[in-house]
Amino acid sequence: MNQRYAVVVGFVALAISLSANAKAAAEQTIKDPISISKFVHSIPAYRGDLGSRLSDAGMGVESIWVQPLTKEQVAEDPMNFAPGDVVIHVFTTGTPNAQGCRVLGSPYLIKRGKKYITQDRTGYWLLTGRCDF
Image (cartoon, rainbow, N blue to C red; front, top):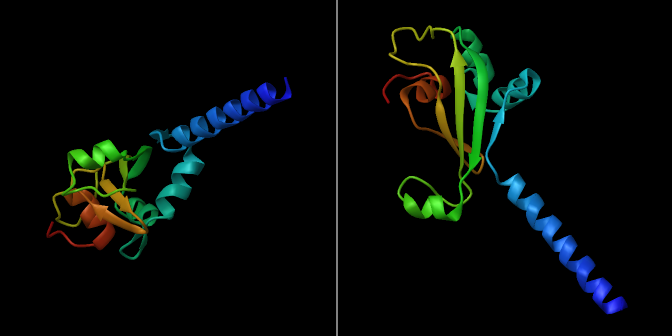
């Protein structure tokens, strides 16, 4: 009886561990203002961080969508994605003051390790300060 109990406990512990890992890798939408602020201020950008750049450009953040890519998603587009990549889409508010650069707002980024790779002109301008995307 004790062996069966130990096996059941082992399976339950494994299931809980797998469930926690699956949730950790699942997509999430960040809407809490404090969490949004911490997130955007953690991304390095031209003249500081993404949070400062957004603010300086007259843009606010409504929400942030974050999705770690699965092996299957990376396999579908291996030229653009690598294992461990995380897709980040920042949904902005306000009209950007981009000093002549034609940006539309809502930057789209890929986080690869410690590096952030821009996927659109808005993200490129915010992170680099340049408009030659």
